[in-house]
Length: 221
Image 1 (cartoon, helix red, strand yellow):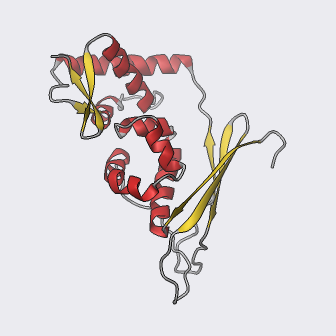
Image 2 (tube, rainbow, N blue to C red; image 1 turned 180 degrees about the horizontal axis):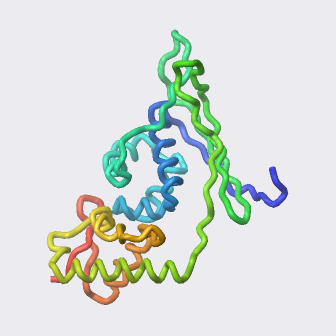
Image 3 (cartoon, rainbow, N blue to C red; image 1 turned 180 degrees about the vertical axis):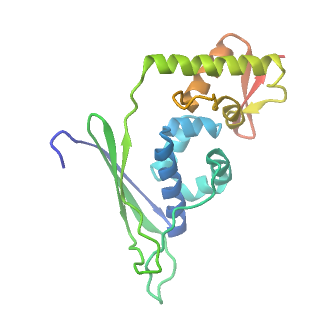
């Protein structure tokens, strides 16, 4: 371990191999998108801690049962990371412990995943997934943040003027309407939408309600 690395935390949970495959798939997707766990919680219409609890291995099967379909819609992808676990012929499928150790330095978080399984190896077997993953810490560019907020705010105001909030809209639905901007340099993150929505709530333009255990945003009647 490099001398400038700091051990941040370690967490563990019990799960079956197919649940681990999905957990790893969603974790990998999030890192690829550069989104935070709070971003995912927001897009799922949940409190900030909801997705982070899942990534920290809390009640993984229960979370997957209720949220995997929406997560696939959010990512517009249903493919899972291929992996095949080694098991003796006489072995039944059992839940095993998964542990994640998180360390960090000034620019990155490093995740080391430890498993209670090994992977099948061979010419016709999928390549074993990486069990050491990295995540860049966000660098906030004030100008880009401002441009992103201006873009999202203008889209939301136009949507409000067209009665686009009628009947209530989910975070995920609204994100589909604001994320594309025609510029490869301006990236819209879920946090930009979240911040603009809460500014509109503070101004009394829209309200947030809990509908079927998810946040829903509606115009003020």
